Length: 165
Image (cartoon, rainbow, N blue to C red; front, side, top):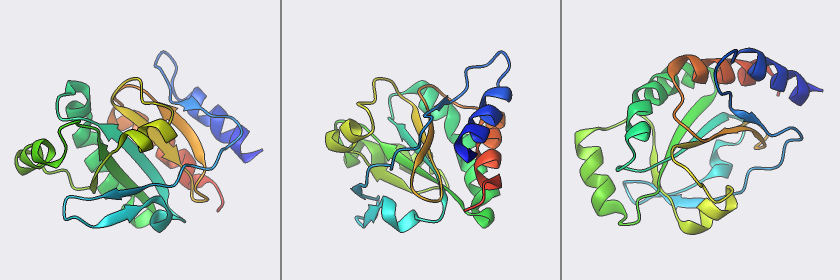
């Protein structure tokens, strides 16, 4: 029932806009083990109990770069309420390219290096940016394959935070 209600909230907020795709019955988000810029291994499990905005992006992707300020802002705004933004860089040339990019544009949220295996687990990532909204129980609530603006991000995050854990 909660999933259906959240789906209606998400869809009702997007009159004339493309909403994140409600996944209906919530599937468990695939676990991952990815490295951050400091070389530490990070897992999805360590964020259990939080609302996770998992954003797949690349340094060459203009819409990805354009949505970074909005992701950074919601990450800061909602951190105290239990939401976290994680960026997953999908650059084929790896950390050398991503590190150079991050030296110029450092978002305030963790950046992890993606792998083809993680991309496959999350549906193949046919387009970037691709954002996956994960609830406090580690289940996928919605996905979106295009840039999201601040208003769109806030709508989905607010609806997810309003759910009872």
